Length: 158
Length: 131
Image 1 (cartoon, rainbow over the protein chains, first blue to last red):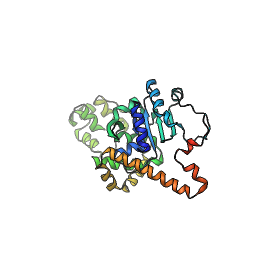
Image 2: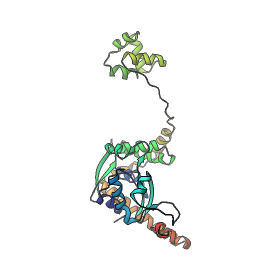
Image 3: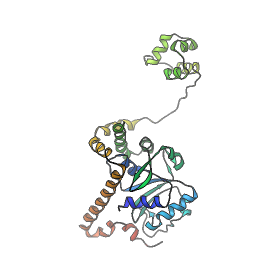
Image 4: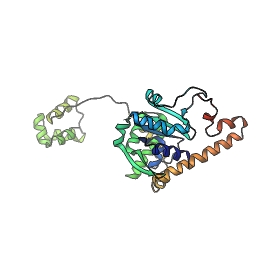
């Protein structure tokens, strides 16, 4: 089982409400680009925060890029106190996004998702038009090539 | 914009022209983009159709030119190949690529002894003290 599959399986089996966004979503839509982390938009409902903590706890989440040894409490309280978290785990990098520029929070994104099956899991994926939309809204120069590929992909599908 | 307003109000060009106090050919010219109307003219056409013109400031679409340039270089054969695969196959190949690349990074780091510890998968976690 790859790191990506392990992370997705853990989130799915814990019934975490999440939407795959970013590079993994792009790949699922047909992008040829590689990505090294899993970006997910997650529901901020208290019950979901608890499920998220439970799902990732076995993988010892830690703030990505932070010096070793800093106190980091992987808990509901920590999630409640923050919004977006870039984490490293023993099974790969994961970004937990409480809100996405140009897309809003989990509930606002749900209508713009599609259901897909991968690794035997039913997963929610941000749809291609909205993936392009949030990439454009982010306004980062590094995303321009990605946007070009996603728009080309949309043209191929149409 | 004039055509959109007229169609939303379900008016003919002649009916809109009468409401605005101008001629049908003048409306046709506006709709074809052959005129250079003032904001006031556009506002009067919109009002005649029961609408209002709202002006907003938006960032210049500088990125579009860059995206269009990048788009010319996109390898569409790869995209078409991916589109023939299932979502599962696309994600599985991503996971496999990631694993292969990590193995390659580790191999490169092993050739540089000082960086071996840093390159081991999960080393960032393993090397830190327990909180």
